[in-house]
Amino acid sequence: MSAILLENAIVHYEVLGRGRPTLFLHGWVGSWRYWFPVMQVVSNSFRTYAIDMWGFGDTAKDATRYTLERQLQLLDSFLEEMGIARLALVGHGLGAVLALMFARRHPDMVDRVMAVSCPLDETMLSSRLSSPALPELVEWLLGGDTLSDPVRLEIPKTDPGAIQASLNGIKSVNLQALWKDLKTACLFVNGQNDPAVSPPRLDQLSDLPYMIHAVSFEGSGHFPMINETSKFCRLLADFLALSSGDSPRELQVKDEWKRRVR
Image 1 (spheres, rainbow, N blue to C red):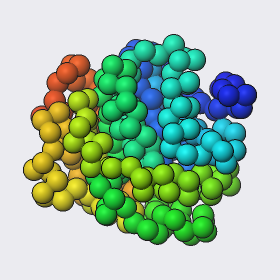
Image 2 (cartoon, helix red, strand yellow):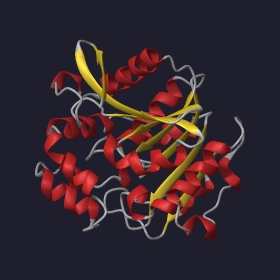
Image 3 (tube, helix red, strand yellow):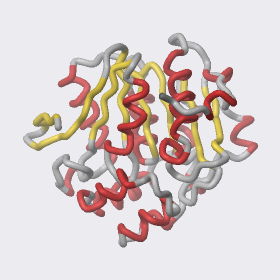
Image 4 (cartoon, helix red, strand yellow):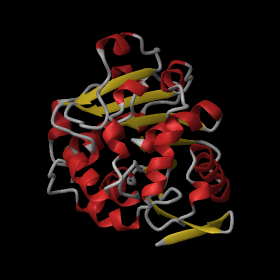
């Protein structure tokens, strides 16, 4: 386990591989751990980092740090500590919203963003995410998936206040403006069966800027990286391999992505 001291508190992270840096940001439940299989695959070509945000996993618990602004400050401090000047961000749920906010704020630092299970506007986010009962919330999000133990195992480490604070903060964020004004290449990935975040509507898809593309996983719920790991890894690898400044619009879910990733 790797950890650093930021703002006089412990921040846990993990790192694998060599190459251009990519940072993975977890969602409302779980921690860095469910990203590990994906990191193993793409670390063959990229240096992959995953971090536990304030209130999650093995990072410090402190209610004063759970606002979206303080989580963004954590990302800023972490990248400075790691000496990372430019990178790709891969965020899921809460992490996807933070990735878009960070990219909009620091377009010079973020080369591209993959936003997984990310609401394109406030109407697409289920109010059930605010449930105070974490075990029930987790089972609802996972849908009985037997491969999701990395999420379940980390739940006791989650401060429910961190989830609620982020959801409260999102209410004041113009989610639509985050992607409409984004100048960075961005790929939205949504599961068709996600109970928490509705996939993009047809009118939203037709309104996406040239540098933004959306892909839907028909066999996935809220965790495409768990539900369809091989396909997700191939898509991510292709997205990360694009030349800087290229649009992701040429990317599509290919039949070969369904093959097992060795």
